[in-house]
Image 1 (tube, rainbow, N blue to C red):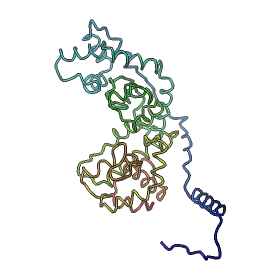
Image 2 (cartoon, rainbow, N blue to C red; image 1 turned 30 degrees about the vertical axis):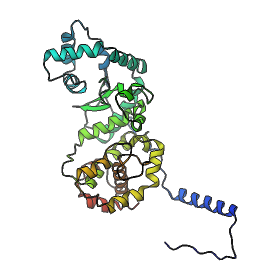
Image 3 (cartoon, rainbow, N blue to C red; image 1 turned 60 degrees about the vertical axis):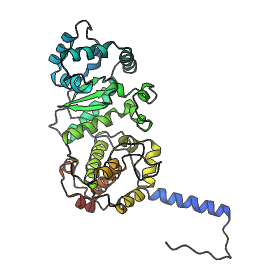
Image 4 (spheres, one colour; image 1 turned 45 degrees about the horizontal axis):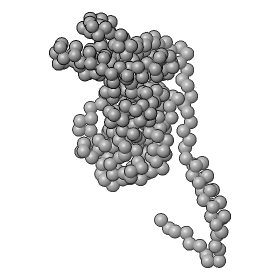
Length: 352
């Protein structure tokens, strides 16, 4: 870079320098693209049959003197979800009938789980607001995918087993015990890291539901993939989410604090060129590349102020660049697009 030389006959005053810096900041802010909130989709003609099941309440209503009968009733009424819930979400399946019954009795009577259920019921005496947010999400999804079967919703308690939102067949399933606010004291007891507490807000439910739906509808095999391939897949997921959860801002979509998002925007070029210098974009070394697309307190190789999952955020910007360069491409076409990663990057004209 060529440095500007000044004549010794002109010594700028402190006030002049302040004004100059202020004008430069204004110039940069004017050049920075704005991120306006997306306009609502016209879903007035989109029909969704919303069915919300408070499975958490059904489970804790089981008679502990006759657990087997209560569980069998739930399995008969909600077969697909019940099998996954009892077998995986609370993890009592596959160990024999006696072990299962003992586990269920512990879950329904142990004071910590009873307290957890009481807390969930106090926070969510009803799910009316969440139902409305999810209904709009479902309508937005059907706007793009009219033949999609969606609307069945299960609310559950996993016992703080880290299940936020999962998709089982066509049902979206929400773990209410993972949305008790960042101040819920027992999150620390189960070692939920501080950086992740921003996601324990009920307002995050549509974002997590959208990502769960995306991963179910568009599965991705990470084995043998390059970092750039992973970044583009993650970028598509985030682009999908911003289009179907149209009230969410970028920080919420990423699960970042505002400060972490600001860091990304301020250091975007540095991060991208660091990846190039480290020859990571087309690496398949999992040890090196997986930290770039996974959540964490920070990203390996980056300053401590950086957030985790920087590769996903960069992938999002690349996908946004591609869609800007190809305005004729629909969301549905983007999701089906299977260009080689290097070609996708080139056609995005991404240059931070």
